[in-house]
Length: 315
Ligand code: MG
Image (cartoon, rainbow, N blue to C red; front, top):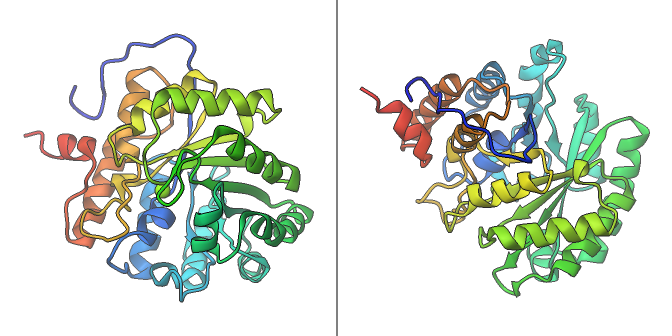
């Protein structure tokens, strides 16, 4: 079991390979209390790429007033220019509106993500507008990105439960998901923003999306481990044909001392399960773990990832 290698026994009907969409530098750091220096962020992203991650969400072009942790996007992206030489590497950035798109395109971003909500209340709290108005705001962003051959991911948050509205009906999520696809999103990321989903609910949503014509190849899943369900939910999604999974190195963004703690699934915990199932990820788990230990030192607190803790306390 040493050296980041679980015993491998495959299970039936699972994908041969999973693409991990690493969200640590964006979703993770955005939800950490500490503001990390730009040079540390750049080194973090280089280390993640060296550990074999091929999709690394780098930063956000949301107004710095709302996300001060990521206010340095303009300074950060030029520090990643050397990574352009890596053919397989994608560095998507979050873009809230046309102004954000202009800033991202000016820096040569080739992939963007927009951030929508399946519920009215969260949409109003997070975006200051309802679901329909937020989609109207995204429409020109997505259209202009596509004109420039920039790939667009659509985050859909609160797909299972909402802190104000409670359980979210599957049909409501399907409606917004279809609208994002119709606007031109290449991929959706279904978010369990408060971590309340359980595997049957995941299966029900994915089945409904398939019935309504949203191809499983266009779906990624974004689970939070708030109630300890993130890996169970991931396995349910894999059994439904999903092969894109979001995770945050070291469980960044799940800092127990931060008010906004929401418990992103740790990439190491995900990789341990996937490698145990014989599913390829391209990730070197030891290198990734070392990166998360390094970042935990920068943040001044241990990683909440079980796998990081297990692998970094082996002697
Ligand atoms: Mg998250």
